[in-house]
Amino acid sequence: MGYARRWIHRHPYVYAVYKSDKFRLATSPFRIFPNFAIIGAQKSGTTSLYDFVTRHPNIASARKKEIHFFSSSLYGFGRMWYRSNFPTRISRYYYKKNGKKLLVGEATPYYLFHPLVPERMKRVLPDIKLIAILRNPVDRTYSHYNFALRQNRESLSFEEALDAEGDRMGGHRERIIQDPNFDDFEFKTHSYLSRSIYVDQLSHWFKHYDRSRFLIVSSEDLAMDPQRILDQIFDFLGVPPYNVDDLRDLNVYEYSNMSESTRKFLTDYFEPHNQRLFRLLGTSFDW
Image (cartoon, rainbow, N blue to C red):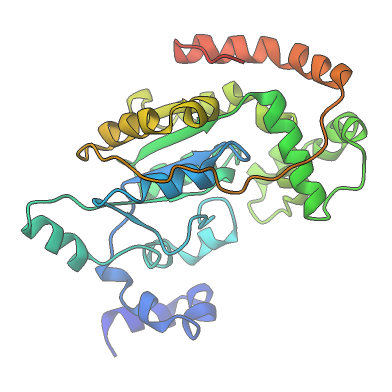
């Protein structure tokens, strides 16, 4: 029995999924870790951005966009399972042989918000580059709510859900830190306001990674001039410039307009948090 198979049989978490994907797990030792990750924010255009970025000829996609390795029980599967989601070293070798660079990345929007991810990721990927795309928090919050409605995970009105968030989320962040196996359904699903306070999330990430490892863009800028944002990202990742065709947004859904009174409430609510964010980043967005 080869090294990879011996390793798989010694790890019960991995063996549970071994039968469904023997080849990837067996070849995990010969695969590469990602060079970059799009870490969020949810409902800010991560799907479109990942699609655009991975069309670059020097950038490969992961097995699927959202792996959730660092933000779920999949973390117990270990590094070998995580690496099974990416291309082989042979792929990178052939690129290098032809004088080219091969990068690979993943995109899991929950990473930005989950309190355990930065520390976990730093252990496994200390040199990774991180991309965050942020959306006007008022619009992101409402989009998040409507997403929960479509998934049948919300029964309250938008205003009722905002009022209930404190009770729904109370103490969950601390419980997740204390017990990584704690059911984080409420934390993940009903965190409408909390996920839109980007300054708290990024401040936590900056404790684990140097600021130079981050590129932070806005979804509004991506919608207005996608190629300009992609140029910034390709430069950040160290790959040659590349013009991407057909830059249409993905995962676009229509829903009813927010009431003006609720919009004003949210605008006022997020204003001090946005100002803290702009001071942290040394730049501002048109929100």
